[in-house]
View 1 (cartoon, rainbow, N blue to C red):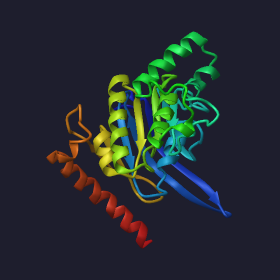
View 2: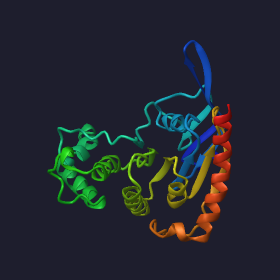
View 3: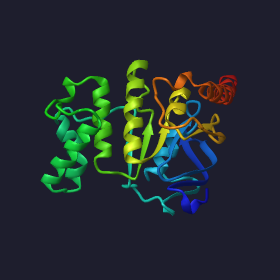
Length: 263
């Protein structure tokens, strides 16, 4: 893929930080293109710079070396064309579900009638119809995650950066939300960069899985997920190709983890 055809492009990226008077390198020599509409998953050991790449894509952080481009131009600060979903749902407890989802549209001074229409449609998309007047304290953890996803999708970002959004959930709820996210992605065609520690989740959701090395994070493998879509998230684990990809990715990732533990 050429840089011009990529939506998000990393070229020779390095990022260094100062800590306790000394410098350390979080990521180094990262080369990656993410195509429009692609679901790109990123896995790697803790501290290898996965979140750093998201922050640079969002225009929240500048690389120490190299360039990050969005739609062919340097990433603006901040990059308002992307949405960012963090590990915490960050829903506002004093706002109802409807008003939480409406917040980014209110900040953009969208007409009230349009806000009602778009928020109602988004609540229907994420399966929260009937909960518009509920407050976060009245919702389950999974429902709060849906509120956060709806709030990100409602202003129609071109790309979504997701930093382990399902990491703290139990296995059953995680699978349910993976199914919801897969359904939404298929309907919207939004570009995703999705960070996860879960290899199975990466295979289930991704078009490609990018494996990062231990710090300083470099790309050690890029694996195409050639399991046909649409994928049933509840059954894909029984696919023979799933097992092959899991073994391939686990071998690469376990080598990195073992090196990290030995260092």
